[in-house]
Image (cartoon, rainbow, N blue to C red):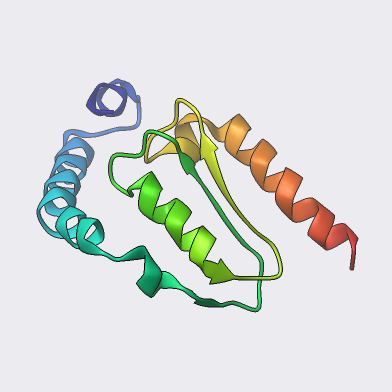
Length: 113
């Protein structure tokens, strides 16, 4: 990911520094907390459809936890959708796949109205 940030024409050294700092903070504070979560505590009932679309190789948001969240909730429609070859930034790095999955799941719900 760092290589992509350095190669992006609009990226500045400050942007790269901010990205690195964000990764460090996530590793120190967020990852231990999400790793300790019991998926059973994530259950609940939601009135809206829920679609979690993320990279299958997401190193920041554990895919196992995201999938467990979707499994545990009750919603009118729900799905966990891993994007193969995608990481935490799948929405940007695999944007065509992300958009295809989003449209496939949301558009049928809109058309029913």
